[in-house]
Image (cartoon, rainbow, N blue to C red):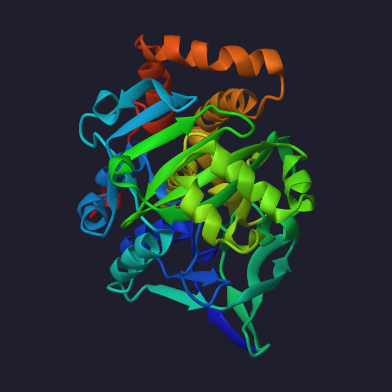
Length: 404
């Protein structure tokens, strides 16, 4: 069996894994990213980049690279009830440097990051490989065994294994990491349709019956619609006759009628669990979790990629300081969680409150929800709340070495 030696092996080639790999290779560490898929193609996964993401990229000198990639800018968010606008917020109230959100298909983002990574000989990316098991020495993980599509196994030896492999992380499972909490109020059922001309460049939140729904611009000329379904509702929908469900869509919004008339079955719809979780401990025994593996966010606020990359950027700095210390003490990697864990918990609390509001089945709450939201948008409270979620804290700083 072939053995490859690396300084760090990263499991998962999503935004967190690719940003971490890029930053560490910049610092001359030998890094290998293991991605189970054959390529970057993926849909309905982390395509909204909030101002926070671009503020992070600015701090590590990657913002111009990201801005040059194909994307659609989102300038404002709008709330509706019974097809009437009841409130809005402009992004220029949220961030000075980046007064917009961005819709960027994840394959474009990941390929753009990969092009930067490929310029560095210290970086390697292996597609189509699954982690089979850990290699241990004195109860410490010192590497992984991977299997490619031809069932060939290879040993990757590294003093540090990073799990950046998402909410269903293999590293998390093999390392027997434990949850501190999980929150699962419902599901989002996504579909994509052509973008009407007057919908370009804005988020929409519709608080209607029988399903509240979100509408997001999707680059280059489509929209992604997500129906918010309380726990158990998705199962009921899948059990109903498809023509009945199509009738529900047509009643929700006149713009859905043409789409509903053309879809033959449920295969055009993709469900996503609106689940939040947080791991009790992000580092142990030679393994570090980052991104959704450590702190998965619900779709509320479309903040998942931004938070995942937050822990990746902090991890790059902490890993560098740990490896540069006179004696390699990997327990110092607990600092990753110490530096960003509490802020992520606070954002999760806000998301969970939004989840309670979005997925509520209470007739009383459903009745008052539009009026409460309308009142909030007429004050500065909505901007104050959103800034806490979609922008970096003013105190957030990273080592300038990460930007070289």
